[in-house]
Image (cartoon, rainbow, N blue to C red; front, top):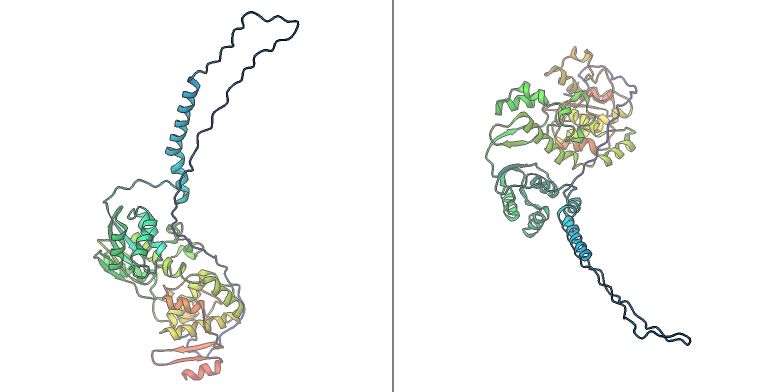
Length: 416
């Protein structure tokens, strides 16, 4: 539970190379646009030929009769052909060019024909932005034009009233009706799955089996980063092909019997909405680098947050635990967290366990563990992104006692 096992052994110190992480950047919001072809004018015509009469000159005899030059007649055939060609060009533009140009303003693809009135189910993750909701509804064919959706949101002043959850809509539904339902809340009744903070993938799989009957082994087999990295870029570069830490703790509702893939995607959607897209990792990276001289990737932050989650019992404790761990990392001191070995043993940690060789043994190894050890709460993630500035190097936490210390002597006194 506490960082220093209740042994009278002073932690070893030393430096270790930190694993480098991958920086991620998300973003994406639906854009609409319209195109109006410019008008074309018909070319101007005109111009007539002039004829001059010959003048009489001395020494020459004018003929008795001069036949006037006949005016050349123009055939109407070329004009008719030109008109036909022009009509064909305009028709071709309207049929082919205009939809292509319009497509560039609405996402670069021609809009597929959607059959109206087809019932579809959509899930709006908690914390979704207005643009994300519009994108989800548009991809499902619920709203034919995102611009109409935005207009309906504005008309109903519904920006802050839209509720997350599972909904049944019909394709090409009236945007005002869609907004009204989003304000009212989810209209799909189903079985709820509650995933508390601090669970591992294996523990989450057991919960899923209890609620939906999906074998835990099947869920764990499906929970591989390689199966989802194409759709969730924040999974790029994770260790051991593991989704550990990313199955966001929340209460989920699914109608019928969902598949393991459906559940995992709902959890990753939630992580995207509440963590990857919502939190300022760049500012945190700068703060930690300047204060502690430590380079952290997004994945490193998640790993540390998972350890903090399992060490503290409330938000205040976890904030101070985060600060303590940063102080240790700064001076090359091992984290010495029992929680990281509990990830290996699955239960209480003994003195013998702490001698066991494992990449998750933070008594024998400096730095962070290869992967997160659980799915941390949002507050634990925020604690490692913006830790309090302390000089703590030790802590001792039980349900009855909490001590944070700057020196080892103070630490020993706290539990003796």
